[in-house]
Every structure is written in C-alpha cells, then in structure tokens.
Length: 224
Image (cartoon, rainbow, N blue to C red; front, side):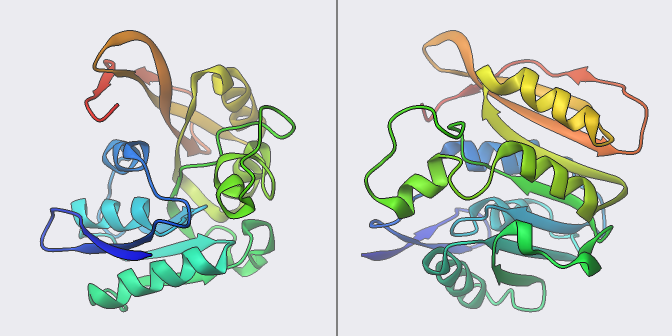
C-alpha cells in the first residue's frame, strides 16, 4: 500500500510503499552528514524512493539541481510522486536506470553524489526472497566498487562523494576510493543509543585533492 509520510521540514512529503523497500534512519543521517555548498549539482545514486536526495534538499535549498537515480521502476515512480506533490519539478529529475548505464555526457557534472548503497557484499548472507527488497540490501545489481568507480567519473574536480556503509566494509571502501582518485576527507562512526561498537560509518571523499582526513565525534542514532 502506498503511503505519504511527512518529512517534518517545510511541509514536505515523501511517498513510500509498504510492499517495497522502505528507507531507514541511516538515509536521514547520511543527508545530514553531507557537506553542502551553494549551487550544488547533486545526484542521489541508488535513490530508492528518493529520501536521501529529498531530505538533503530540504536541509539545503541552495542546491541548483538534484537527480534521483534508481534502477527499480516502482521506486522511481514513488520518487516522481514525491517530486510532484512537493512541486519540486524545476529542481529534481528522476532517472530510472542503472548507474552503470548513465551516459558519458554526465561525466564531470556533479559537485555532490549521495549514496546509501546495498550493505551486503555480493555472495554473502541470506538474501530476502522478495527480489525488489533484496536488490536494495544486497549487491545484486551494483557493487560498492562500481558505485565508487562511477562516482569518480561523474564528479567534477573537487566534487564530493558521501556514502554510508556497515563498519566491516570500511577498509575496502577507503582503499577503493583512493584507487580512483577520491580522497576521504571526513568520517563519522555511528552507534546506537545503547552504546557499544559502531555499526555504521559515514564518509565523504573529494575528487582530486590531497588527503586531509577529519574524524568526527561518534553520532548516536536515537532511532536504533
């Protein structure tokens, strides 16, 4: 069933479907973590129903444009409903295709790419029987490595890639970013309100700059 939920910012709303993948608090945390610059040209990779891109724009309305890029047509349709109901058609474009199929004329376009990727590495763990949900949780149609490689091509010089991921994949992500010319500049680990070891990390990497990594204080996710 399709439902409309309030973002609790400027009366903005977002469409979700309880039979498809629904966003978690991680998406909102990522949109808050990302650095913002006036006139940003933004892409939300693996956008789902558009929560990261829409929430980022709600917090940073000086962005020039936001592209919501999602492979699943049902989720892209929800993104389009969200764009329409909020009157954001002049800012947002919904693109229903795999990021691997993005055309070369988008190379160097974006100053910021946001991505809440599938967390489960290809071939690991039990896969949800519903393929539409499994695609959002497991690397079935895109891998972390592909996301980083494609982001490096689509970002302009000085552009930022912001992602979240499970902590066990931290080293792999940092090494891959470095291999394609993306320098991690900001990292924050996320813990639950019960404490314990971090379960998630947020990372921002910049294209074509010298490494100057800043580790932020741990973020406590009150929603977990």
